[in-house]
Image (tube, rainbow over all chains, first blue to last red; front, side, top):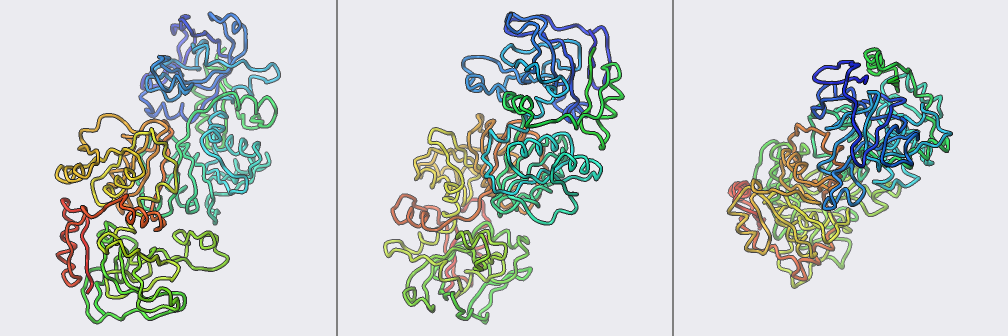
Length: 318
Length: 318
């Protein structure tokens, strides 16, 4: 099959071995995939990943022991747990924290930048017919935004800053707005801020921020962003840390203690609330799409994804 | 009056200007003071403090508009807010987060290593006759331990690691034990761990720790301790950060996000629960006292406080 592989460098292949059907997993033909910041990090050595990257996708089940899934259009949660009864994480449906998990296109499991992928049956969620591929492909990153609500309760009258005007920052600001919050989104790129402003978001240049916030969501993707977040949160405030920056941050911890700041690391989330938000039209990520490339043009696609002026770049395997 | 002053270096003086009575404050003759890690940090430039250090004390009110306080033995909360009605922190009795606060012996206010100090009347709490000076002087650091309970709820069946076998680590482990938790205290100093073990605490050499914990309280006082705490906490676990390490930590943030770790900065706490725990005998810090020096011998006292084999060193101004 066709696949983009990473083994220290990227290679587009047409002869890559397709996954075979194994018990309790389904084979999915990828219809559309998204390029995420993590995919760009993989190229810089994140998780020392080797194989087929890509974890944002919508596809069609082409083979499965679960006959009710075959032929269905699905999205899929990317963490596959060990499934052992003795695993407290798998037993609690928190496969995403199972210490022996694989993660689609990130850790020990080939991903979505290919014709076909394999995922556990239980990871797959059928996409309603009303949701087009171009929206369904946002389920995974939007689930990462909705994960915040499953971790902390944010009172409605609190001030919220989303720091970072990239893909994830935009989705988190849209999710907060959909849930009746009024976040401020701050970044460094005037052009993107104007685009996000046109979507109804309250945006600011990061350099123009003057007051502090009760909650700061760091989506900068840079270690430096965490330091900036500490400077922008009120005493007793909360920082939600979303950036899996591979780089180290030279950090003075004293302000965290003195101002009794809370920090909450936040990663993947459940798909159901995100897909529901897309299906209901509560969140519309369509304006964030800046390009769609066939998989064979992965190089141009990654180049576009690296451009600071772009939000989401999509890949079409076939 | 006699006072130990810091102005880039320490100086013991007998001619220091005693504080004068000002509205809404009381003058307190210091009976006994404790040396804290923060006092040692002050000597290294913490908060760029200038003046009389010292914030752990028990004393006697010698002058006050509050006649009911005069002659009483008191301890005192160390943060003095601006008191303005418009200050959300002062209005909520959280003077310790008022942005215009002074802090006894730490920020803009002379402290306890002197004959006499001044604090707002509202900061003072009368010490029951049954509590001797040598125990009452622990109220402030024990309040910092009890602050954890005011910030987060720790379920009884969770595993808790107190990282650091210093003064604060010992008090936090004693407080957790008093509140019916079963913490493990880990450190680097075999001799101190044996002393703490003799008090009934479950102790371990840090290098021998093998499993991870639901909660890790970092009391190491080192930036490096935070990195260690991240490695010792379970996914979705919580780190309580107590170390106001002036040093920077070279830190990879990715594990915080991937394992969705929460971090809670924790500083000063309310005195009432700590004093009550001492008065009831629920916490007995007496075995932690390793020396008591007259203020004039401050140099020997600080030297003793710097010794890793010692817990608490006390100073007697008069």
